Image (cartoon, rainbow, N blue to C red; front, side, top):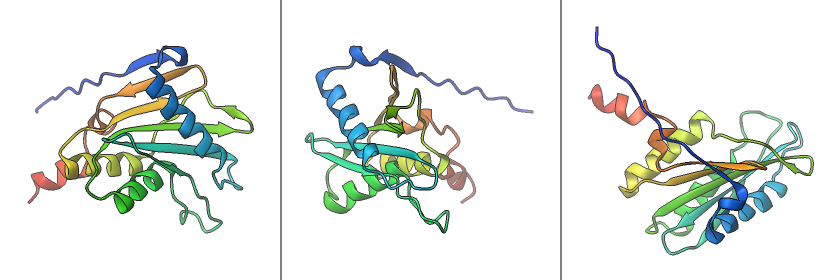
Length: 160
């Protein structure tokens, strides 16, 4: 038998501890969440992909009655960023969710979004800093690998 350990570092900040730039990212994610189309769940999620040059590309969840035909905010932002700016690397992704008029306490990407984040990092050969923005605190990881330590790519490569 072989045993492996995975260590994940997650830094948690109070929202008032964010830099001005990070606060701008959080505000953009919250604004995007407020514009989401979520008539079935009422759980509106917004994301902002921050490009290396500072450009912000927002996305929000788009539900569909023929579930799972909708799309998560993280993937909308990442796919839009690559479609509009294919050569620009994504340096960060901020995510926030709103229920009613309130920012929820915490948020985390689904497995599909984590895998897309991994693919984004692999394609651009650079990690994406991820800010998971809650109403009082923000959790931050320096790479999607922290959110998905056993990604499809790692497993796929092992079996080639």
